[in-house]
Length: 105
Image 1 (cartoon, rainbow, N blue to C red):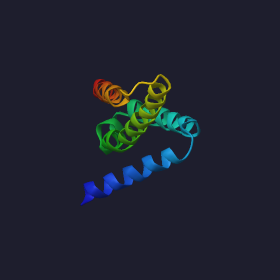
Image 2: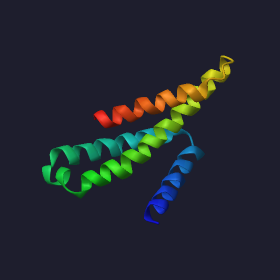
Image 3: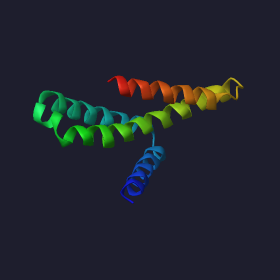
Image 4: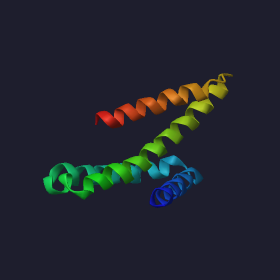
């Protein structure tokens, strides 16, 4: 039940991201990322405790989904302008690329 509720909340957040221009949120997301990165990497207690889990599970998951959706939209637009219909295939490659980047960091 909890995972369904979290999934529902994440979908709501992503839906809200889609309602407005991404550029408006880019600055906010970058600021949050800088603040969270600073506190997690500078403070070992925070890094080793529950904040690390929250940082990975909540913030990066939502940010990851946001990036995927943004890149899918950009890729779809580029493919449509060029008359191509392979945006789904390219989007899958983008998702895998982002996934592996997230794992490596």
